[in-house]
Every structure is written in structure tokens, then in C-alpha cells.
Image (tube, rainbow over all chains, first blue to last red; front, side, top):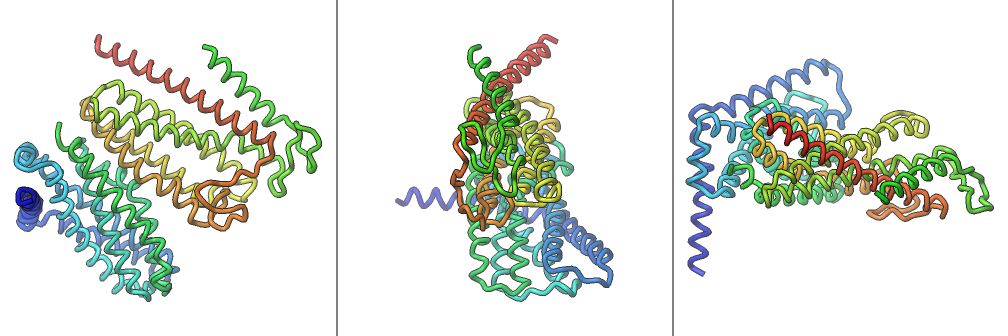
Length: 231
Length: 232
């Protein structure tokens, strides 16, 4: 039906405009990017200092990679919603866009941030930590892509809760960790498989868990977002 | 009233019989429990540890159900019920963790092994902790109720990955894990001897009734507290 397609495209347009609004204001201040980048550099430096010249087993290194990513992400991803509260623009946004469009716009923005963050972290990690080698690139790429999507979805909805709770950053990792842990453990496992040179088929179980996690979190968050967003 | 007496009798019987019934390698009479090689007397933990773990999951689901109810109807009583269930769930979660850890020391050699089920109860503890930190961080009552309801639902949809999926597809020490000779899978096949089975299910029922009783008490106390605050 023609009516449906115009409604669909206007919905897609409001998702995009929420995303572009955040993107432009991020480019103006570069707050989240700088915070994420500095956090990555700092944590990788700490890993390097603590490892010294000694290597570590590949499963420990895969775990540490995702520890770096988790805490770096926690430093910057709540920004999208906290910013709205700080500037007092929440109310305007509530009037201008339907709640789920706001959610998907912010999710898109966080997804771009997470993908950028992961790319930088992984490149630095591969370059600086000599013991960490990826043997099966296909497993690693799929795991990182799926992991980023799930990560962004869970981080976005928790960020929305945090911003409304007026607690800013302190509670963010506390609330996110239990929700993200199924994802983190699976991604760490897939990374370990990739660094040990497993066949692509061996990681199917991990991919299934990741995909079902993404579906569950995105669906439930988009349904619940309205209750967080509107008073 | 009658069901409380029934519960008291049931739990007393479970404690007395669960600890007191003799074990023998070849049970002759109905009251003798079989000896399970490798477990012996330590097998008795199943009467107390499994019900506490069951209750921590049940409380978690109850909390989620009332959270959904709250978001639909916005009745403050549902929020009280949701947080009361979460509070009880936390207590039983701690009990399950402690009884399990002490038992693991004697049977598996260390207090903690990061077996998938140990991971899952640890995550459940974290979720309860996060839930109460969130509640204490928001002052305004309606906002607190809405935000903690949403969090409880989100946590409840991701927790099954731990509670039901991971313990079964990963190798572990608990029954039902991958590689268990008695069969891995979502439904652990019951291979319990009849007298053990009777005590086990009696214990599950008794503990569940105990939960309902404690839950109702907590809800009533919270209501009274709120009425007291409202009066000033």
C-alpha cells in the first residue's frame, strides 16, 4: 500500500535524523570519541605494563581484549542519552520523534561508535601485543561484527536507564555487566577459537548464541524503551 | 493458616528424613537411601541446595512478572511485589551459592570452579545487586518503579542464556552438563531412587510454600512502611 510505504519512509527518516543529529553534535565536541580513544590507549598500556616481556596464553589474551573493549565502551556509550538530559533536550526530542525511532537512531549511533572503537582497539592490540595472533580471520570478523551489534543494543538501553536515573556514569558498568556477560563470554570464546586456528564450523554454536542474544535484546529493548523514555 | 502448618510439618519431615534416613549400598526397606558411588553422605545436599537454587530462579521470574504488570497498569503495589520478590530471591541466591560452595570444597576439591552453573548463579547475584543499586539511586518513586521494572525485564530475558542454555551446552561439573554420562539436555533425566525422589519433591514444595509465605509478609511490611511514611 502506498500509505504504508510513506509511513515507513517517514519512520526511517526520523531514525536517520536522530542518528545524524547525534553524529553532528559528536563531531562538534568529539567528547565520546576522545573518551573512548583515551580509555583504549590507557587500558592497553596497563595490559602492556603488566605483561612486561612475558607472554600470556591465548585464552587470557582473548579475555583481556574484551575487557579492554568493555570498559572503554562503558566510558563513552552512555553519552548519547546523558547528553540529552544535561542539555535539557529530552522533552523536545520526546515531542518530535516516536520513542522507537529515538531508540533505533541512538542504537545506530552507538553501533557506529562501537564498531570504530573495536576497530581501533583490535588494531592496537594486534600491533602491540605480540603473543596475540588471529589464525582464523573469518571466525574473528563474524564474532566482532555480531558482538558489536549485541554490545551496542544492550549498552544503548542501559544508557537510557542510566540517564533517567540521574546517576550518570557510576552505575553504568554495574548495570551493564550482568546483561552483557552472556555476550562477552561467547565472544571471548569465539576469539579464543579464532586465535587457536579452529575451523569456521567449530564456532557455529557461538554464532547461534550471539544471534539469538541480539534478536532478544533488540526486540525487548525496543519494546521497553517507551517506558524509560516517557514519564 | 492450614497451609502454613502443612508447610511446617513438611519442611520438618524433609529436614529430619533428609538428614536422618540411613544409607545402604543395597537398600532393602523403603526407608533406606541408596549409596551413590563418589557422593555417599554428601548426596543429601540435593534436598536443600537444589530447592534454594530453584527459589532464586522462581523469585527472579516472579519479580519479572510483577515488573511487567507494573508497566502495564502502573499500580504501585506491583512495584512493591516486584522488589519484595527480588529481595527474597537475593537471599535464596546467597544461600544456594554458599551451600554449593561449601559442598564443592568437599566433593570437587575447591570452593569455586567456574563451572557454568556457578557462573550462572554468580551472574544472578550480580543482577540482584545491580537491581538494588539502581533502586537506591533513584529517589522519585514512580521513576524508580518504572526504571527498575524495565531493568528487571531486560535482565530476565538475558539471564536464561546462563540459567538454561550455557550450563547444558558447556562441559561442567553439575548434572545435565555436556558430557554427562546420564545425558545432557534441557531436561535432566531423573535417576533418583523412589524415597529420595519423594523427599526431594516434598522439599521443593515445602520451600516454595515458604517462599510464598515470606513473600506475603514482605509485601505487607512494605505496604505498612509506605503508609507510615505517607502519614509523615
